[in-house]
Length: 456
View 1 (cartoon, rainbow, N blue to C red):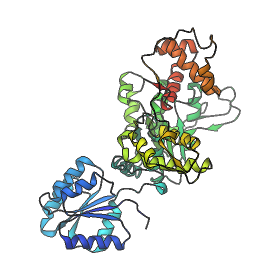
View 2: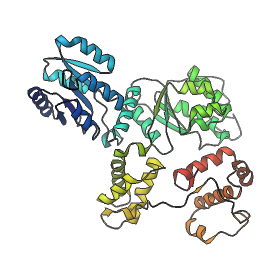
View 3: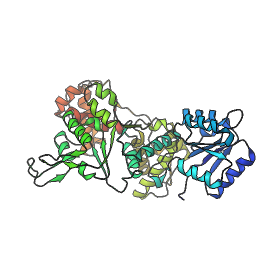
View 4: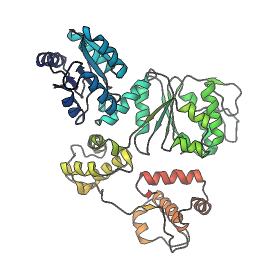
C-alpha cells in the first residue's frame, strides 16, 4: 500500500465505534483524526487537509446529512462516506443526492471500511505525486484534475500567469491511461506566427524554403499521449480555424502534405486570459473556445491557497539548494512568516525566483527574511509617466541601467519598458517605435510582469 500523508477524518459520536474505527485505521497504517460530532468536524476541516471524511448519519445536534451539505458548500470535491444502519436506508438515498460518494451499512467489516476509503479518497499529493498541495483549495482542484484524467475529455486550464498550469497538465497526464505515452508541450505565445503552423502540424520536404526533409509536428509527436497547448489564446486567428478542424476530425495534415494522419491524443489547453472576454473582443474563435472548454479547471492563485506557500517554498529550497551546492539549507520561522504575508502577484513562478535568489544571498544554513528581498519596490506600470529623454536608443545608457543590465536580456527589457513609458503607455505607438508585432510586445510584457518588472 502506498504511503499516505493526509489523515482520514472520522466523525462518530459513539465512543466505542469511534475507537473501533480508529483501531482499524491504525492497524492499516493510516493516519486519522477522530471527532465526536459535526461541529468539531467542521472546525478541524478548516484547520487542516484530509483525504476523506467517514461520518455517521445519526448524530446530534448536527446529523451526518447536515454535515455533508456543509462540506459540499466548503470543499465540494472532498469525498464523504456516510455510515448508516439498515433501517435508515432512506437517509442514505438522501445522502447520495446531497453529494455523498457512498455509504456503509452498519455493521460492517473492517475490510469494507478500508475498501471504501481506498476507492474514494482524494489523490495523494507530495513529492512522490509530483505536486505539492497542502491547502484544501488546491487539494480540491487536484481531486477534480485526477477525475477528469481518467477520461479522454479535452481539459482547459485557466489561471493567472505563474500559478502552475503546466504542472497540473502533467499531473493529468501522469494519472491518465496515456501515462506511458508522450507528453508534448508547445507554448503558442513563444513561437513566431510564421513558424507556429509548421511546428504544430509538421511539414513535408519542400513545403517551403528550408524544408529539406519532412518533419512531424507536435500533434504527431504526441500520438497516444497528451498534447499541451500552452497559452492557446495567443494563437493567431487564421491558425485557430485549422486547430478547430484538427480537433473536430481528429486528424492532422502536414504543411505541403496531402495525406491526413489520424490522431489518438488527449488535448490540454491553458490560458491566463479571460477566454470569454477574448471571444467577445473577437481575438479568439467562439467555436474553438467551446471545443476546448469541455472540462474547465480553474487553478487558484497562490495567495488563494496560503497553506501551500511554505510547503512549495521548502520544496524549492531542497530542489535548487541541491543544484547550487547548498544542501541542508532551511527556511527560518521568520522567513516562512514573511513568505505567508507576501501577496505573490507572480504566483509560484515568483516564489521560485525568490527562493533561488535567497539561496544565493544567504551564507549560512538558514534563510532569513533579509535574504528574501520581499520589500515593495518601484514597478513600471500604467499610467506611465513620459520620460524626458527622446528614446533609449538615442540616449546614453543611464548609470542605474548599466548596473542592472548585465546581459542582453536586461538591456532589451529596459529598452522596451522605457519606450513604453515615453509613449505614455500606448502599445500601438510602442510597437511602431520598437519595430515588433503587438503579439511579441504582449508576450514580452507578460514575461516582465511575471518577473515583477512590470505592473498594469
